[in-house]
Image 1 (cartoon, rainbow, N blue to C red):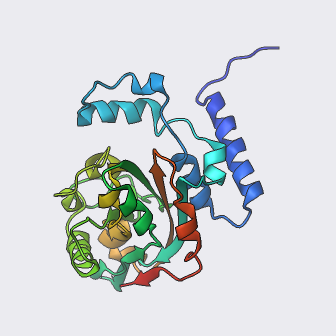
Image 2: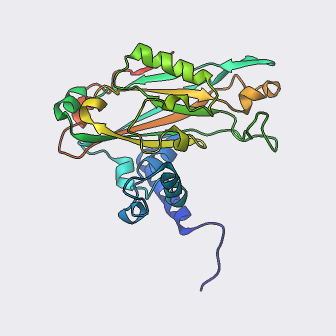
Image 3: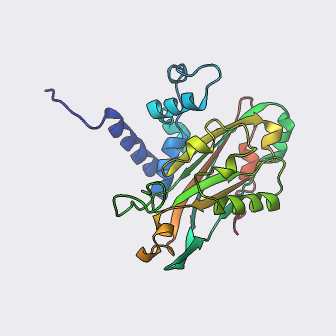
Length: 281
């Protein structure tokens, strides 16, 4: 009746069931979105967080994510939003690079100006709130054994997200991201000056799934209503002879706002959710 198993765990079957339940509830969702919702809904238990010191370092956080990932997924949270815990989902596409053999450059950046509950957040003033952002996409593996740059490149392309800072207007935010998109992705230029993130770019910008939590005052969050998705390096750009540079890619961006007090964040968003909010620049 019993046998030995290896190389996987019972969690594989559990998460596969959750993914099937999400698709059964919303069969129109992309695979990128189902994957994003599973990660986005995850939370660390008190026992998991108990391994962190009172003031965790980046190494402590790295150990946490290596040991427990993004926590235990919550099916209810993945499918439904509460009035004081609202989730926005964006399914988008872009062309990361453009060019021909010998000359491939970065092409698209997507700027999402979201239907933010600004008045509701401003009314909360100095109350602490959370914003969680998850970016999910799939890559084409490197057809060779190694990349062509100073680091081994496994992914065909990379995508990153950046959130508008409270002191920026849309023009300065767009200018900053255009500059960062031209930088090598090892520089983590987008990190400078933006505090409040749990992981920060150095830890979250790995692989093809990026998730992070920002915590600060509601007044500060009220003006952080824009999120950019932009490309970084990959072998599609670094090996133009393989003629992958003109391909389109899909991505899913999931954004949650959470207030620790009773406040209706859902209704202000619902009233404008039918208005197009995506702009290509």
